Every structure is written in C-alpha cells, then in structure tokens.
Image (cartoon, rainbow, N blue to C red; front, side):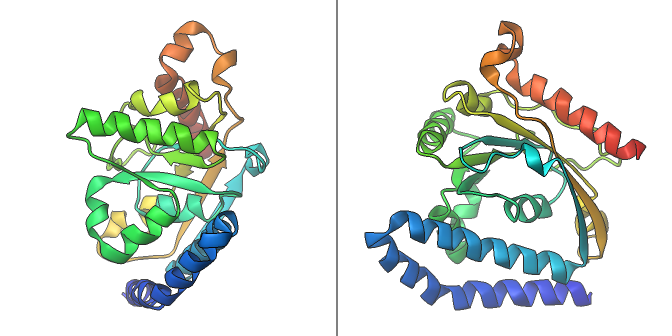
Length: 245
C-alpha cells in the first residue's frame, strides 16, 4: 500500500509541477525545437526511473548493445503491464514516440506530455484514423524519431508469460515503408509490479531483453509479408529463454 501511495503522490506532483516546465519548454522550442525535445525526453525518463525506484522494481537489462543510438528504429515488444511503458521508455537513447490508445487523449496533462514526446494515438474503431496514424509514424521515423509499439493491442493477462495475442501486421508498415530496423523486446515480470495483485504495487524483478536488429529488406518475401508474426516468434524465443534461466 505504501508503494502505491508513493507512486500516486509522485505522479500527481510531477504533473502539477510540470506545468511551468511545459511552458518553459514551449518557449525554448520556438528557437531550439530539437534541444527542447531532448530536454523533455530526459525529464520524463528521470521521472520514470523515480517511479521504478518507488515501486521497488529491480530491473535486469539484456542485449542493450543491440539498440542503435544514432538512428531511428521501430521498437516492438510483448505487453503485460502498464509498467512496460515506464520500463522501456526510461531506456530509450533518443527521441521516441509510443503508440497509445486514443482514450488517453482525454487525460489533460498526461496527454500534453505525450504529444510533446511525439506519441501517437490510435483509434481502433476507425480504420481511416488508424492508417493516418501509421503514416504519421512513418514520417516521424524518417525525421529521426523512433516509434515503440506493443502490437498485441492490449495487455496479456494469462499466467504464462510466453502466451501472446497475435501481433497486428498494420503497425509493422512503419518499418517496411521506411527501411528502419526493428528492435524486438521481450519483457518478463512486469505484471508482478501491479497487475498480478491489483490495486497494490509491490517490489518485483523485471527482465527486459533486446534482440538483434531485424532488417526487413534482408528477410524473405514471405517473412516481409508477415513481419509481425516473424518478430513475434523472435520475442517468443527470448521469453522462453528467460523462463529457462
């Protein structure tokens, strides 16, 4: 219960005290947009690391050397917890936008921070809007901004962490249309922070593993056509290896 209260208080204070920060960053962005974007990225990463500390999360990272630091990529991961975003975003070396549910736009201060950080909002009930979101993501990658997607579309809730919903292929077009590398991410233990004993937050050990970059152009035509399934199999292999340790 103490951890839940600490995390909740931190979030509330961060969002409230962050209002003047957003104003200052907006002014900086008028003349130095890239510097403002990087500054906002580091501020949020600091906040996420604080949240992980308050939650008592012990994080093991494997394969971080596979993540390019000088080029945009498409991060693809399995999804078990709200904390997956906190964990993975705190490790991004450069500007990265996340794909989130459209309903989050209704959360005033949170949605403002997300928009500043190039996040994209997906309306699952509107195919036209979904295509527009993918096209925006393609443009952002071309402009050097990485994108992170959890292509199951929702959080997995089964007891077996290797069980995943089918990856949605549409979002993979961001890689196939730009030629950027796909960085597969396998996350285990994140549901033990919150979802496994909702509504409490408890100390947990989480493993985040990055796989080797996938170059869509080097794959067979069949694998290029089913890029989501191909990437999911790689993530499944990493999850299985983690369970065997």
